[in-house]
Length: 426
Image (cartoon, rainbow, N blue to C red; front, side, top):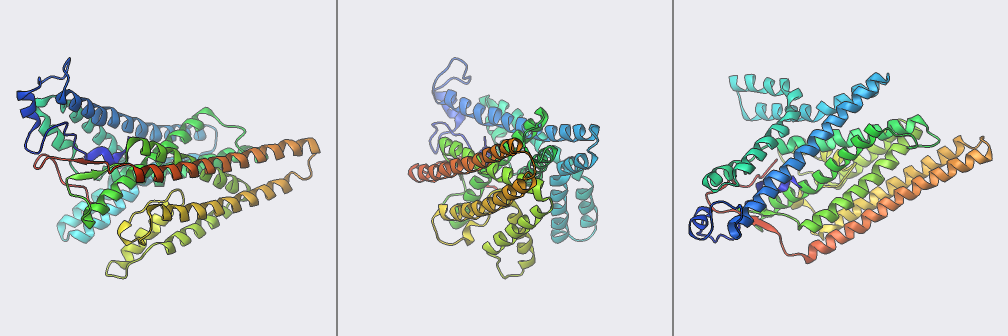
């Protein structure tokens, strides 16, 4: 399930001038139990979206953080205090970044005693900010259940569609916590036996990497849908009461696409870091510079702010590509930017993979031939895994854009006066 579904209104079969209550009074029973019709379909869709969907998001978010804390505790007990502290510190990194953002925003928009009191509160509260999405999801689940009853449905639907910045915390959690956690954990695994990387893996590490990967891939898709909605509404191509949403099967293809890309990306970065240590930061720095130059930096009074935004987005592009500023992009096909990014990542991954292979080959050159054969076979399997995942992701990317271009526009509309306006910014 994606966060972009959060603001979509489910109106059943009601017409422009027909309310849910009128349908219940005239044609359908107030309770959906044992009934069929528009009311029953509406309740089912509400249940799947706001109860099941939100519960899955909450489950994924909580387990992502819980497994990170569990791995940090295991590292600490095993004497790996540096990895334990780094892992635990990354858990609070999204909250600190959001608090810093809110701190600067308060100073820019408020003056006097209000800014003096409100700004420090954001900085002090950063350890608790990771709990914000959890509390909000619990509220969403409660109001989602209550919206199944027609009596107070409008009130609960209005609450469900209120704008919130909790999604920004989730976005930061995905790219400043989940993504670094995956790379850090895979790097630690490669250090256990550098001649045979990924040959010794603990169960809790598999669970941690899996949930972090799921969180990251789902965030990429939900952020894309939010960006498309905002861009089309600002440009006038979509009305305020509508939301862009990819068809479900297209979302599945996109999820498999990014999961495969991320598996290939993290694998080669971890292998390179395990063999050449700090040289991975050189590769990251070059990638950030290239992606920063690729973006458009407007020359206006907020130029410094936009530079920082472009630098942060360039950091995000280390792991995945997102079109934050669709309005400023070149007038090209939607797949063009992703193709350029895929080519760049393919070149980077191939260079890192070749350097790692040559380094490992040199390190095992003095060993007996039988051992060299074992290590060579293992390295070839890792190379096959990398290119297999990348090529499979490339096929899924092609299918995603092909199916998206053939599918009709999938939008959700809302009745006037029943819901909040669009979230124009996270």
